[in-house]
Length: 227
Image 1 (cartoon, rainbow, N blue to C red):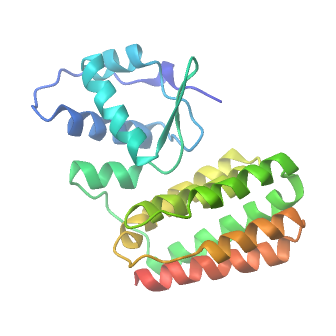
Image 2 (image 1 turned 180 degrees about the horizontal axis):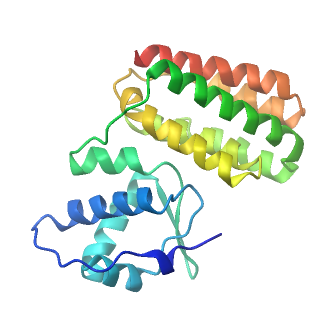
């Protein structure tokens, strides 16, 4: 995993009372400026607090909030990692939506193209242990509801993408799905567990055509419902 500790911006004193919102806003800018994606490790808490110009307790509260949203993963004795697309969650909390410039049809087309390429790679390169771990995520998502299902959806598709072993394409897909997320959050809950289970089964069978076909159907329903 790579770190970005050497690329942090210079500290700026905090002059607002809503420290959690401010920290999250700055983290969002940091993610954009330095092209963070799922799997990247955040700088050490002490260093990040200094660079953002906030106290460690204030930073810790912001990170705890992110942890509850499921977008970061704290590893005891190791550090904090981004788990999934963070920008939609940050945008929702700080009250400002980053502009969605992409045409929805083009966004759908691009997402399918990138995800299909990743799926093709994943069916060839994923290990049995990795596929078993992916199966476990299906069980974890059984009881999610309301806003949680959307984050579970993103986590699943990015988990599949990471099996391909191409961090550049995975980062592109995360960016595309992050742009689609504001529209997805206005949808009624969609139960895609059958699609997900079929994708995992196809991966286990090394059947790229079936996995991609189910992926396309899953994305088509999401983007159609978001229109």
